Every structure is written in structure tokens, then in C-alpha cells.
Image 1: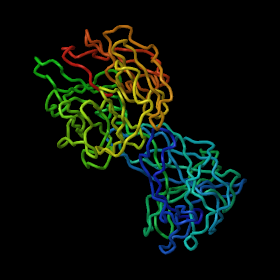
Image 2 (image 1 turned 180 degrees about the horizontal axis):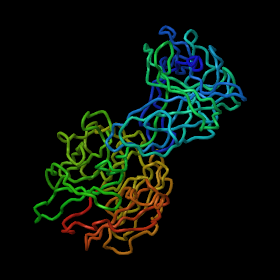
Image 3 (image 1 turned 90 degrees about the vertical axis):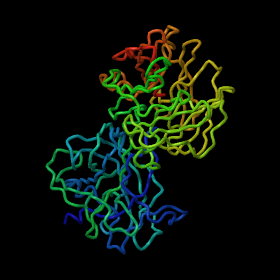
Image 4 (image 1 turned 45 degrees about the vertical axis):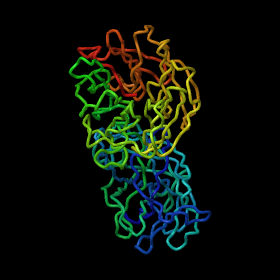
Amino acid sequence: MARRLLMAAIGVALAAPCGAAGTVVLYSNGPIVNLPGGGPGGAHLSRVQGELGLTELGFYLVMGTPSSLTSVELADDFVIDTPGGWHVNAVRLYTLPAAFFASTSCIGPEVNYARLTVAAAPGGPSFAGGLVSPTPTGIYRVPSGDPTVTSCPIKATTIPVNLNLGPGTYWVTWLLDGSSGSFLGFSPLAVPVTRQGQAATGNAQARITACDIINPLCPPGPWFPLLDGGAQQGLAFEVLGTTQSRVKGNLDGQRSADLLLRNVNPASPDYGRIKAWLMNGTTRVSETFVSPDPPGPNWVLVGSDDFDSWSAPGRGPDGQTDLVFYDETTGQVEFWLLDGTTRAGAPVPLTGAAPPPLDWRPVATGDFDEDGRPDLIWRSTSTRKLSIWRMKGTVMAGGLAPSPNEAANANWAIVAALDYNGDGHRDLLWYNATSGSAVTWYLNASAQRLSGQFVNPPSAGNANWKVVAGGDYSWNQVPGTPPLQSSDIVWRNETSGRLVVWHMDNASTRLFGEFTNPSSEPAALDWTVIGPR
């Protein structure tokens, strides 16, 4: 009987773009499409595979009558294997309008209410959700024998959450309800994973609760495998957010951005070496040298971002910050894929394009095209023009033209590429070494400047203070003061070598400033901050 309460089998293969700007799909439990382009007008289809013994369009989420309602709670799992974990911004669920038992078409209602938990086991005491409005995906669920039926459009429902999750296995558990109520045999459906030629597709489970969906406190029944045709199914969902290493410059997976310093004193035994301050907010927890040392003073650090996996090069970001070096003599660029602060293997040269002329050099990194991978931004020292190289790991894959493509004059230099207004797009922080002022350019997803403004206050008020880095150094502060995930500004006093962090809000306004702890290296003037930027 429980199985008949849950109609089964639909499929998902959709890596949809993120619902919130600046996030990426960290995990996709799919696919759902097994007939790409097979529908009317070239629409993608998710066909029930009757030849495998699968018979159902989707899984019911609410059963019963308005006076005696039974909710069906569904759950499926995902694994976080990146060392720093994930910051989860949202979970996206895939649903169908309601259908009667054994029906081959959907007639409504649509989902309009959702309740969701993310926990280490199915179920959980806390939940997120409320009224929702699903959006079309352009994909249709069709019965086994008739791919022309388009009455069952698959829709996506994105539920915002705000979770920091470490490595481990987690379960998404959810309930949905329809826009005009649900009654026996007639409710919105959850979409299962569909892989062509494969009957069993996942670890989904279900349990029945004898209560209304609005009341989450009623005692639930036991969990049981979600089956169709005797095969356990997976459910279509996506986890959206950022890896914790995407706190730019995070080398140890502890959420705060760290600091990179280089010894610039030729008389020092550490000349040219790079040291990492591993930070908890503005407090240095420990320090360690980056290993190995750069091959010479002509190799300068120009970026710190998660470009590629050190354990499986070519796979893409692995949750670990990498380093980008530029040879001022030859113009060559190479990537150090890091395991913590240690380079794993040999340097990886930039490929996909020849280096530009020597008057061009990379000045910062950031995901400007929002494909989940950081890019390189170059600036010409002669023309002051900007150019963005879209990167696929360590391979140049195309260009992106920022607009405007230059600053007002040569006194302005890019010192960081971060999100300074909280809209999810990568912005630029400029510093004028002559006036001591800093300016933010707010960019959109096409690297077009939406506005430019001085930070508030516009300078440190003393010409000895220079902007040297940017990152999120607020993780050890009281939540909301300043806002977590806002981008901050690091200043260095060239006379004393001391460091100060300006904690910024999302309007480029300083909320407060504080010295780092410690405020400098013992030989303060031997070391200068070189990142993150």
C-alpha cells in the first residue's frame, strides 16, 4: 500500500544555472533527461522507461482529503568531500503538476508550498520553506509509449537556506503541497532520477505522516526505500552555494580568508619566500611557508583562487586555493595546484593561448563569467586597458571584454577582485597610490560596470597606508556585525609594516577597522602582503 501512495519514476539530467547570482550548482542529483531534443520543437524529454518495468510519472507528496490528509515525506542524500565543506545557499527541487493514480497526464495543481530540511540523517528538527513559485525548465515528463504528451512540464522550485556544512553525508528531506489543495490520488509529484537503460537510480526513501503538511509536529512513520518496479529510485534535486574555499584565499579550509606575505629584503635569509598567515577572522592562528619557494624574484604572485584539482587535474575546482605566478622576464604564467600550502606536483603552465606582450600582466583573479571557475584579469602597463581571460581550470577558453576597460589614469591599480555589494557578481577594487583613495566598481555578470564609487571613507587618511589585499575576514565576528561573506579591505602601513582590516558592508562602507593579531611580522618591513587579491 505504501508503494501505491508514491507514484514512481521520472528522470533528471539538468545542470541548471544557479537561482542566486554568484552561486554554483555544488551537487546535482540527476540526470532527468533521457531523450534530449526528442519532444515537440526540440524540447528535452524525461521518458518513463516501461521496458525496464518502470511505470510511474512521479512520486506523490500529499495524499488524502482536506479533512483527513496524509503527508508523504521524501528524502535523498548527497556527499560533501571538499576539505573546507560547503556554504549552501539553496536547494532546488524538481516537480510535476498533480496527476491521478496510473495517469499518463498531469492536470494540476502546481506546487505552492514547500518544507525542507538538510541534516545528517533523513528528517530533522529544523526546516526552511514556505510559499513557493515553481519555474519552468523546458523539460517534459512523458509516458513510456507516447513521447508527444506534453501535459507534464517539469518545474524547478528553489528553497533558500543558509547553511555551512563540513565534509560528510547529508540528507535532503522535503514535503510539498499544491496550489489548490490535494485530495485522494491527486497531488503534485516529485521527479525521480532517470538514466537511460538503468532501473535503479539512487537511495531515495519515504515515510508517511498522518497529519496535515502545515503541522510538522505529528509523529511520522518509519522510513522505507522509494521503489518503482522493485528498483530503488533517486530524486531530482540540486544543492546550490559555494565551497568554503571560495572564501577567496582560504588555504586551510577554515572559512576565513588567509594572508600571503613575501619577503622583499635581499639581505634576509628568507628573501623571496612566501609565508601564509592562516587566519581566524583577523587573528593569525598559525603561519607556515608555502612550499616550495618560488624559483626567483622574477616570479611574482598575481592570484590565489581555486583553479583545478591537484589530485585529478582537469576535474575542476577541488575546494583548495591555488596560486598563480607570473614571470616578469618571459611573461609566462603558471599555476601551483595546492594541497593546503604545499604545491602538489610540478607547476602547471597556462595553455589555450600564447602569453600576451610583456606590457600586459595578470593583476587579479575571479569568476567573472560565473561558470564556477575563476578567470584571469590582465592590464596593460602602457595603455592601461583591461582584458579578462575566461578560464577552464588552467586553460584559456575565451575572452570577456570589461566595460569600461580602463581606469581614469595610470595612478589607479586593481588590488582585488571580489564581491563588494553582495549581488553575487565579481567586482573590482581600485587603489590610487598618489591620493591614497580606494574605489569599487560594481560589475554585472558580463563584467559591465553598473556603478563606481569611492569606499566610505575613501582613504585611510595617511599616505603611509596602502591597500594590499582583500577577502572575508569577518568569520570570528558576531554574526551580522559585519555581515558574513562581505568582502573586506586589508591595509599595510609602509613605515611600520602593521596591518589593518576594514570590515565592509555591502555598500562599500567601512563598519569598523581593526589591527590584525599580530599586527605584523617581527621583521615587519621585510615582509609585504601579496594576497589574496
